[in-house]
Length: 404
Image (tube, rainbow, N blue to C red; front, side, top):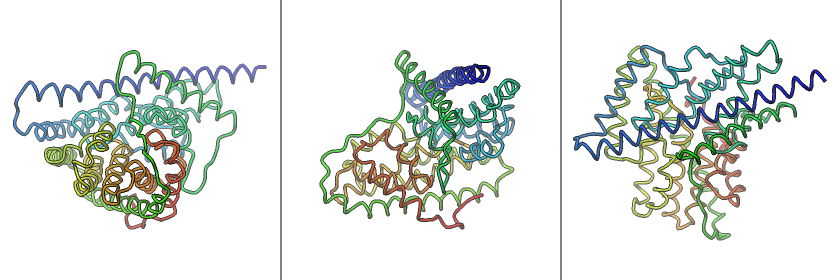
C-alpha cells in the first residue's frame, strides 16, 4: 500500500510538472511572437528606416554577443542537452534564466532557428532542480529530467508521440522504458500539451505548423519516390557540409564571442534583405511557400532552401543559437515543391518524401521523423515517408562531415 501511494503521488507530481512545462512553453512562444510582431511589423510600418533588416540583425547580434560574454554560450544544442541527460540523468540548472534570454533573443531578430533547443535545456534544468529537492522521497527522480525533455518536444512540435519517441530512439534501436515509466512519460507529455493548447485557445497565439492536404495521388507518382528520397538525402549531405564549414569557423573564432554574433547577425540581415523566406524558423512560412510555389519558381525555391540550410548553421555556430528542426523541415518542403514543379507530380506528395528524407538523414531516427512530420502531412503518406526516412538512415554520413 505504501508503494502504491508513493507511485500515485509521483504520478501527481509528474502531471503538475507537465502543466507547468506547458505554461512555460506557451508563455515563451507568446512573448516571442509578440516581440516578432513589434520588431518586424509595428516598427517598420511606423518608421521608414533604410536597411531596417540589416540594422536589426547586426545590432541584435552585437547585443546577443555581449549577453553571451557575460552569461555563457547558451542555449546548448538539442543533441548536447539530450546527450548530457542520457549520460548523467541531470542537466545544470544554475543558468536557467540566462538561457531563456539566450534562447529568446535570436528568435526575435529573425534567426533561422527553432525554439526547441533553448526550451528543452531550460525545462531539463528545472526538472533536475525539482529532482534534487524531491529525491529523498522518490527513487525515480533520476528519470524526471528525460521525462521533462519528452514533454517539451511533444508540446513544441504538437506531437506527443514524437516527444515520447525522439529521446528513446537511437540510431541502432528503440529502447522502451518499462510500463510504469511509460505511464509517467505520457502523463507529463499530455498534461503539458493539453495546457499549451488550452492557453492558446483562451489567450490566443500560434500553436504550431499547419497541416497540409494532399490532392489526388496517382499510382504512377510512387515511381518517383526513389528520386525524391535521393534528392532529400542529397540535401542532407549539403546540410552536413555547411555544418562542418561553420563549425570549423566557430573553432577559429572561439574567443571572439561578440564578433561572431555580430557577424552572424550581419549575414542573417543580408540574407533576409534579399531572401526574406530564409529568416525565422520557417514554421509559419510553410503555407506561404505552398501557396506561392509556382510564382516563386523551382530554381528560386531550391536557392532559398540551400541558403537557409547554410544560414541555420551560421546562426547556430555564430552564437545566434537555437534548434534546427523547423528550418530543416521548411527546406525539405521548399525543395519538395520545386521537385513537384519540375516533375509535374502532386506537390504535397513530393514535399512529404523530400522532407522525410532530409529530416531522416539529419536525425537518423525514422520513427521519430515520421511521427514529427505527421503533424504536417496527411496519414495516407506515412508509408512513403517511412520509406524515405528509413532509406536516409541507412545511407551513412561520411565521418569527415560529422562534427564533434
